[in-house]
Image 1 (tube, rainbow, N blue to C red):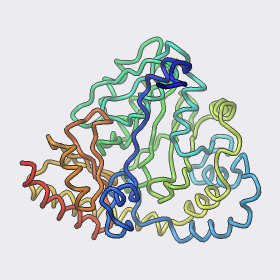
Image 2: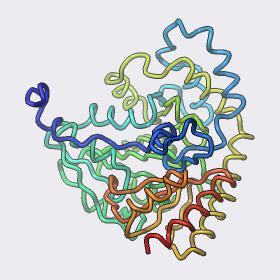
Image 3: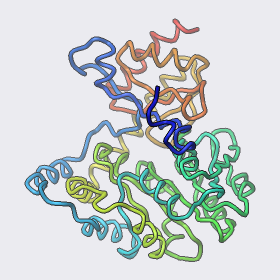
Image 4: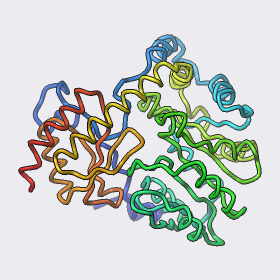
Length: 371
């Protein structure tokens, strides 16, 4: 019998928490192994190059200061981000991953009875956050596996406060281009805050990447752009994200964030990573080659993966849970997508060449068992 559930807010007790990808250690225990050696994790869209050497050196240098509280305003990192994007320092706010910003946005702009608009088949946290604040999440239909921005516009109501576009989209890996984004921003009603969640944008080649910060810079529409150091910069374990918007929006987010939300070590590593352009180039190259390797291999095995622009690939498979289990037995961790509303799909991250090959070999062994 639960002591606390009857005492909790009913809408919180009814929530289903976010299900993260399985860690290497958990799979090792399940398989009865003494170490994680030989297990390949391709479940959480991480950068398997690891952190940049400059970021690791910065973390080492920060160790003697761990008895001190962090810089609560992330001054040096905030200044570096502002310089990179050509915006004022008062247009940047750091957070514990971009996930924290999603919660802060709801905290600042939404109240019970309001609406949040997003796409179906997108990052499940948007729906969870809407429920947390007793708001309705309206999921607009997509065009196949790509956002339908016209459908999202049609879904906006007088009660809508936030519209969130994950671009590139997780878990489908698709991109809405610059022209479509610009048209969308112009058409969103002024009573709605438009949020672009761009966790994977730095992984794209610069010539195809979409610029939404220009809308925040222009200040004509209420637009907020979210980025993170978790993906392209390989710092997922440190949880560093940032928001870019007009100063009044940043001021509102700062009013609802907790103090010291980004650790000293995280700030130091992110600042060093931001300056390591060679690492970013290497990450993109690894992704290009690895994605081609995996897409080609999966198609040879008769699968039909979604054409992706980022560091993960979604593919349909009727027995998704069974395939995930079969791959786990072969020391390859992938992600079933039932929690994202796609029970007959699997998502696999792009890793190093040898890791991708191990996945394809395990896949070739597992598929005959399930067909």
